[in-house]
Length: 223
Image 1 (tube, rainbow, N blue to C red):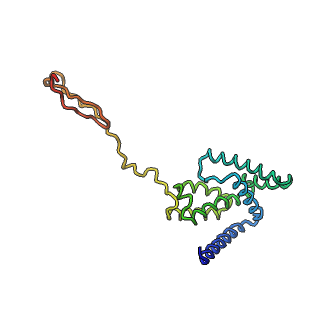
Image 2: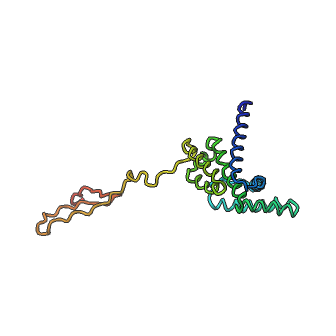
Image 3: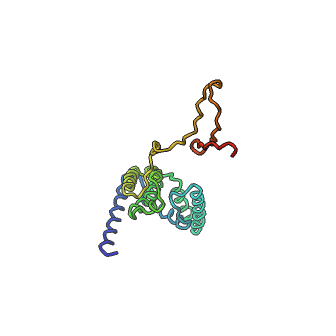
């Protein structure tokens, strides 16, 4: 990486950080120092427990929660009792989203991987073929912490679909007109009354085949 490209990346980082700071300042009651502390504590626990793909199934998510609780118990116990209690309270506050700071911190934490995927050509979205509806399902948590960040995320997701980073979801009724329905065998039409029926012929051997009736040529007598 050349010096010019490195400088350009650093400038983009500063611009993005400044934009997020502006969003945060829209809420004067938000304690940004507390938000940053919660993010650092959360990341420490997540690093120790091991990160998990955001769109993993519910069983994997449950195992991850257990692993993170165990990691929090181990890491915070390294501190003196009073400090351990204070840091654990920060972690619990973040996980439970019970304050404006916690909800804003969770919004930033959820937005960060989206920003990373947009800067890396789709990243894990492309690698795992993630559909857009799965990503949109995560935006509600962002909006709960910041309506502005939620709107920013929705615009970014729309751009990701246009650029092919996210798999679009097919319409539920798409292609229905092209489906082929199986052709069921039809009952034969009733013949004439018995007194008018012609002389009997050797019956044709008819067998049901998949999707209709197959008629086999009559066998010769004596064969």
